[in-house]
Every structure is written in C-alpha cells, then in structure tokens.
Amino acid sequence: MTTDTVSAPETHAFEADVSKLLHMMVHSVYSDKDVFLRELISNAADACEKLRYEAISNPALFGDDPQPRITLVLDKEAGTIVVEDNGIGMSAADMGETLGTIARSGTKAFMDRLTADKNGEGQQLIGQFGVGFYSAFMVAGNVDVVSRRAGTDEAARWSSDGLGTYTIAPVDTAEAPARGTRVTLHLLDDAKTYAERYTVERIVQAQSGHVPVPIFIKELGSDEEERQVADGAALWTKAKSDISEEDYADFYRSVAGQFDKPALTLHYRAEGRHEYSVLTFIPETKPFDLFDPDRKGRIKLYVRRVFITDEAEILPRYLRFVRGLVDSADLPLNMSREMIQDSPVLSAIQKGVSNRILSELDKIATSDADRYGAIWENFGAVLKEGLYEDFERRAQLLGLARFKTSTSNGQWRSLKDYAASLQDNQTAIYYATGTDLDRIAQSPQLEGFKARGIEVLLLPDQVDSFWTTVGVDYDGKPFKSVTQGATDLSLIPLAEGSAAADAPNEDVSSFINFAKEALADQVSDVRVSDRLTTSAVCIVASESAMDLQLERMLAAAGQVPERAKPVLEVNAGHTLIAKLGQTGASDEERSDLAFLLLDEARIAEGQPPADPRAFAERLERLMAKSLN
Image 1 (tube, helix red, strand yellow):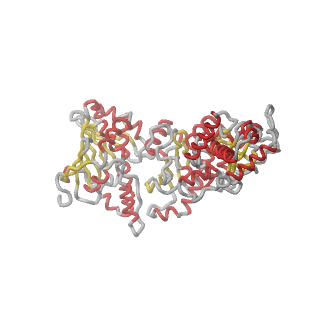
Image 2 (cartoon, one colour):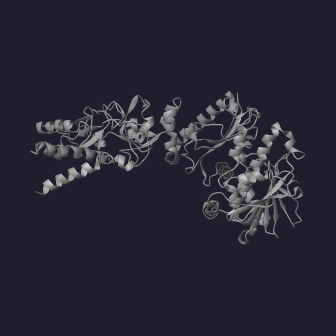
Image 3 (cartoon, one colour):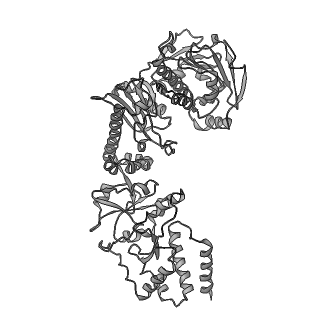
C-alpha cells in the first residue's frame, strides 16, 4: 500500500475537552455498561446502510461481497471483543474527522459533500460513528479501529486509550477488512465477561436483534462454528403479534438515542394509493434536544428498507418529539433529497402519519386521562406550537390541549371541561400568561374573575403568548387575556359570599383624575377597575396594545422598538385608595403617592419599578413623613 497521504504514526489530541467529556460519558451517561455493544452494532449497521445506498449509483462498491453483515469475534484468552462490518468503511482522513471529535458522527461532512453534488444523486445518512462509539471505553482500556473505505485500496488504524490522545497510522491491507471497519476492544479486567459467547449473545438478542443487518458471533478457541444470532429482518416489517413490548422498547432506544421507555408506540402499515410502514414512538421523558432552535424532526425515512434520510420532515415541527421511522414502498431510491421533499407521495405520507399520530393521542386522551396527562406534561408546550402554525388541524389540537386553571387545583383541564363550566353571560374564554404558574395564579388581575367563579386558563409557556393572538376560538368563544383591554364583568353575577365593589366617591374620583395627569408620561389611562377585589392597583394593556407578557418577551428580544403605555387600574373600594382620596397632602406628595401606586402595580407583575432610584427616593420621603 502507499503511505503518501498518511504518515506513520501520527499522534493527535482529541478536540477541545474531549478527555473530560469522555470521562463524564463513561462514568455518568451510561449506567448500564452493556449499552456499549448496542452502540457499536448500531454504528456498524449504519455503515452497512450507507454502503447499500451509495451502491445504488455505484454497484462496484459491493465487489464480490454484496450481502451486508456484522461479525462479533470473541477471544476469551486475549480478553478482546471485535465488532466488524463490511459497510462503507473509513479513510484515515475520515477517522480524524469522525473519531477525533466527540458528539460528531460524520453525517455533517457527508451532507456537505452531497449538498455540493450538482447532479442531486446523493443522500445523507446517519453517521457511522457518533457519541455512542465512546461508550466502548467503559469496558476497554484501549480501542483499535482498522478500516478501509469501499472502493479504495488503502487502510488505516485508529488507536486510543480514551485519556486524551489518539493515533492514526497506515496499516497493511492484509491486516484490514476487504472493506468496512473492524473495532477491537481490549477489555478491562472487570469486563472480561464480554469476551464470552453467552454474555454477548444475550446482549445482542436483547438490544440489537432488530437491526436490519444480520449479526454473527465467532468465538476463537472454541469448537463451535460461527453462528448467526440476528437475522437482519427489520423490526417494522414484522407482524405486530410477533413483536414483544421489550422488542419495541429496545428498538425505540436505538432509533431515538434515549434510555427510557416509550410512552406511546404506533406501528402500522398503510395500504391503498400509497404503501408505507410506520413505527413511531413518543418518549416517556423529554429528549435533550426538544427545544433546539432549528426544531428539526427526528423521523427517519426508508425506501424499501434502504435508509434515505432523517431530514425529510415527515412530521410538522410541533410533533418533533416523536421518534421513529417511515418505510415507503413507492418513493424511488435514486431521487435527490430536494425532489423527495417536494414529492406528492411524501406529502401524502406526511399528512397520513401526522393525522394518525394526533388520532392516537386523541384516543389516549379519551381512554386514559392519567397517561395522556403525563404525555401532555412533557410535550404540551411543543404541541401548542401547532395552534399557532397549523390552521388545518387547529380544532383537533384544541381538543388535545390541556390546561391548569384558576379553579383546577393543579389538575389538567380540557377546553371541553372549561366550556361546561361557563358562567351565565360569559362570552369569552379567559386566560392569563406569564413565566411561572404560581405567580400567574396570584396575579391581582384574576381577583374579579375568582369573585365571580369564572375559570381562567393559566398559561406559563412562551408559545402561549403567540397562539392566543391569532384569532383562535373554541365552541364560538374567543380567547381573551385578563391583562388586556377593558373587561366588563358587571353582567356576570358575583359568587355567593363575594361583595360588589363600591362605586368611587368624589374624593377617590378626584385622586384618580389627579393621578391620570401626574402619570401621563407613564400610562395611557388611570381608571376604576372591576377586576380587583383585594389588591389596590394593577396594570393592564390597553385594548389596542399587545398583551403585557407578549410585549415583555418581544422587548427582551429587541423586537419592540417602543413599549406601549399600560393602563393603571384602581380598586375604588380599597381602604388605601379611599384614604388617598381623603388626604390633605400637597400636590407633590400626591404625585409621589401616584407614582408609588404605579410601581406597586409593576412589582406585583414581577417587573422592577420604571425608575428604581426615583422609587427609593419617594419611598424615603413617605417614610420620613410618617415618622414625624
């Protein structure tokens, strides 16, 4: 072999703080050491799938070995386990790129190459090696990777003890597989059982029996011949009756990269105008990438069991928490990603799968409220994005939506439940937004609603400030914020035991008029409130302005050049307001009192005073006078 492109040997340091990350992964991320074998087998299967796809346009890559396979070679005496595949393989440069950087799989580089492909013949696939590869160091003191890329004559070896450096060196082709990758793990003393057939066979059957590549075990020094332990039959092609819950759970963990169990498994085959198989899962816990800014889905697309892409956008982005795959019998294998995305076949699949998932959620919501409540707890904030984005399915999503309310005592309530508890003359569905559920529940703006037994939706998620603004209604009732515009509650009777607020007397009216002038630069109006029963003041947005919480969010993001002036509402029946109307204070003192009331209202909203220094000075003057 030639060594022009790879000098022998080369020592490299892992990028950034890989040694620290390796230590964290080995000792923290993976609590079950058996997982290393599942990860290496998954990587090997991905490499075989990548080769199978590239061979569509270049059949010569198969050579005289067209059948993909994964072979596990056990050497109990030497204390090693080998995971070998005849997949796409890696060059020395590939090794430096993919095995020298943690949390990188080679997929991005493959995507970049294919993006530059003017003929549009390529497709990106799952990377050959990802974070899971490094789990090998849980059981191995040293790991050697020998690989030869399909269609090339050169081979290279990557070696590391996982402590900070790795080496890459050329290797004679006689020592390398004809194509593909051989990963050799030199097992630690407390991990030697992984060189025993029984242990490895148990792990493979329990965790990797579903991979779409046959798996064989060969035990050196044993009289037993090489034996196949997994048939390579894709799990999604099997009948549901032949698949156990544990099989589904193992497949879910592999395809989703999760370590929990699925909260919902959906497996079916669609037939008719378009034929495709679907195997999807809703996780039991929130995936770490749930709120990634790109909001990408995680559904893999196969065509007749050939992996095509995991970026086909099978589901709308508000269903990005769903994991799994779709295998189409109708899409052509040699179609570019761009053409696939625009294909009417894929559009039909997207619509069918999305509707089916929402229908399954609706069934669970009806039949098992506790189970659905757990799903909504994890993913409700994401599902509500659909209320803003998906007009076609908005009614269905509103039916799925669950809320905690001012009267639900922490329990989830549907809009159907809410509609059943409407008060006489109530013409809207009232809601309050914020960032903290408890703070929202204590908002002074809710007092008048509570006094009339009106249920208010408590909305703590950021998306709530957006979907409520797009003209959504339920059962003919619009959604109305309790912190925006005038709220005429006079037509709704007070609950038993609640007293009606007193009308403002002449002194109170005089003070309100004075405050309106004193605060003209700060507020758009000062008026008597029918929302307040126990608090003295509150602020609300004017009818034409955006809701207070939405304005705060947009202002924090630099999206609001100038914030609108709020309205200061005053509880005319409050003792403090009555005394302020009767005081014989000077105009300067009354101005201080008006500003202090406004700052009190801001603080009750969780906001700082508009001018903290001026607030402190006014407070000092008031305290000094009270001590005289």
